Length: 205
Image (tube, rainbow, N blue to C red; front, side, top):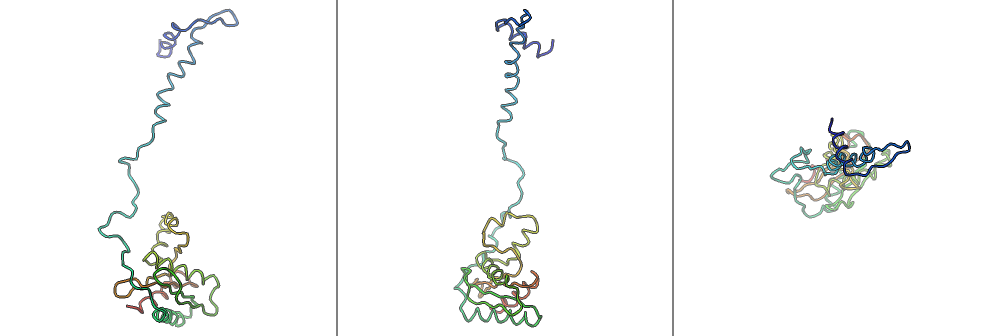
């Protein structure tokens, strides 16, 4: 006798016999639903248990460095004259290379201070340049950092900020070790935009 027959036999002893249509009785038939319920309870209890993540391997989220990355402090916001100098340097580099590049310079809050869109530049580059500059200023880093994150599959960075521009071509403008604004360039490839922007950002020291 296997375990199922044993359980059916024991349950049948405590259940009343019921006549079937052919005149026979089957206490085992009466016991079967109860058996199914009892034998399924351990499985149900097991599947109801929440999965614990304690000790489970978790993907890295930047680690725990001694210092917070991109922690350069803010300084006084870039002045109009400083912004014009940054823009002029970037524009000169773009003209030297023959690349129609739209350039935006913003303050520490990402607000526009200086802007230039030359003839022949794509119209969409106006917003792109400003968003690159704003992203760089507010997040204290070159926008290529976010581009690299997307390329590596870390798409969650897009949930940080709906106005983020995750494309090369945005640089913080740093003077005396403090961020005073940022510059954004658009109209070419990401690498072209970054090269033009870097020329402008390096004007201020």
